[in-house]
Length: 438
Image (cartoon, rainbow, N blue to C red; front, side):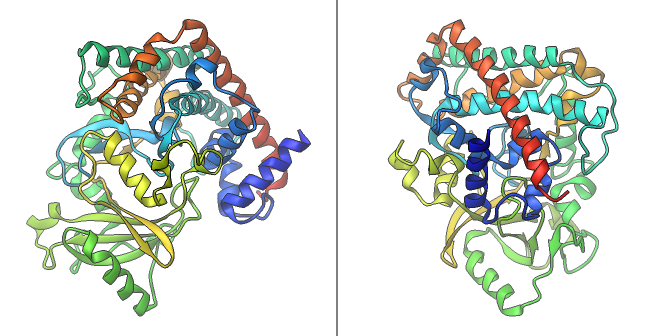
């Protein structure tokens, strides 16, 4: 274990710039629970695979390479409007491509399954008082570990079945997940997203735009929320950001703030929010306004250990993210680009008005969750992930063929690996909690 702890120190120091125990905000956040640590330490995951501390089943590792999420976990799926804030279709799909690259599909499968188990543990730990979240959990019914194991099986079965449907042409690569039935776990979350769309009843109060911007004042400005937004007091810096990024947005930049405290794995990465819209905004024009995020991008987490898998991965970090998102989504954001600025690569992308993310309590707590809802969620994610992976190479369908041909014994081996790795993350969390400042 001492050797493994040294590896943790080396990886986290390389990625975050300081060693665990230094009081970094990101590291303190990761001590909330093993689930949060998994989210914040994707590079540790790839170090463990590269060192063969854990290894994908041979049959899965032999699948053809594809574009992968890289940081696949239960909270990196959700509802959003296609084409960023420009589209009207609300879908359920992967929503984070910061660590996307060309790699092994099994990485995403292993990481998702591990997160599914740790998501359940996260909620159980809060109810039992083992974990102290930033916000209280207002539910006391949590799915049992046995139900989480059933969800693991439902996840890979859905992934495999979707690949089979693509091969049989019962489904095409334009298919997306939406219009969930009323009895489905995701129904209420989908309706919440729809209400936040332009023209929806909650657009002026609950959309991403309304939460960040006071839509009543003129000129439009970001709200004063110190824990989220930092005013850019240096006028020359403000004007430089405006000058550099104006060519990449689709209207006038009305206001700029620095975004602070966002994300888990990238909480220490510099980012700005641009309020974009018509120069003279009328109440009728509010639907034309949206937020564009400009984020400093580092190399995808897998690439430190697996940089030689594909020449595509030699693209700059932001360019690779843009390419993967464009390939893996049906209708990617219309504002999506990469910029080289201040000797760093920056990702430019829309913030969806209707974005609704998934928190652990949404899928592992409550009456619906304990009565099969977690399995419903895992099934939806399995299908959405298979579609995203399959869109990389629609000519040969070699990945889909390999997935369908994989033996049941190998799938069972994957489930055991997901269980074993979840236990490893729990042990790593205990260590981090012992060295990190509360």
